[in-house]
Image (cartoon, rainbow over all chains, first blue to last red; front, top):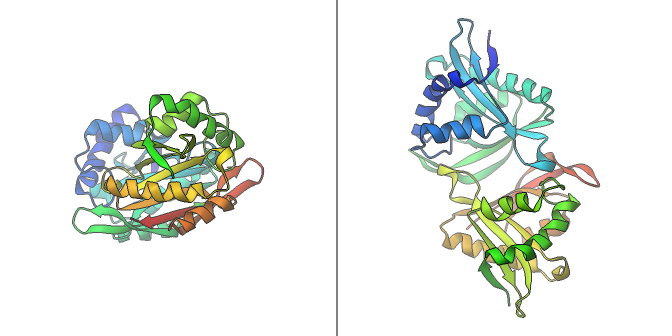
Length: 162
Length: 162
């Protein structure tokens, strides 16, 4: 059982604890690996339309995601989302659960489709999770990402009509 | 002969005169057709990395474009650009000339590739101009744009390594 709640101010430290190692690693998110907590909060929680935290049956925060319009104005019926799963909660299919729930929420918020712009091709677990969530690859941007270990790698654009 | 210069404050009214009918029409750019001049300036000139105006041999402003990173941090070696050609200067291949010059400038600025995220599929003149400029379609987002006359239409993602 996963409980999804809008992110409150007091949830931020928990979410930052999930995001920081991911951002610092420079393997899946484009943010500068030296991003500050303040910049991360702006990126994840302040400039997004909505930000959520997911808790397990025991109330532990196990993941988080944001939803924002992918484009302004005449393109704002397509949303973009970002996800993070706590390190301690990986390997249980949580990414798929989060993605499916975010699709429901996006639909309720009036979005007609969901689009990811930079799914790092070497992040196979993510690609698999999003495919399992009904997203499909609609294009691949060659060498779109400077992977911390692997250098320039491709990134997929993924899409699902809601 | 096309002269490309960084946009100065005093150029803005001329550029806004080119942009306003395009934004109001709601057929090619996603901005809200009711966008204010101030919002447009923020979008085109303030939140971009660099913004340019193109003048013909007589010194008349005939077009403009901006360059910005398509993604932050580890994705900021790919740029995104937007172009406008003055209504009175259309039909002379200016879009291709602007795009090619923007590619040179982007290369000088250190970008490794150029990417367009929302080339409205019904905007055939633009698609043709970008193909002619060496960009290629790497994906198509279904129903990504609420076209003012045609309703939901597809948009292409275009890309070129620099």
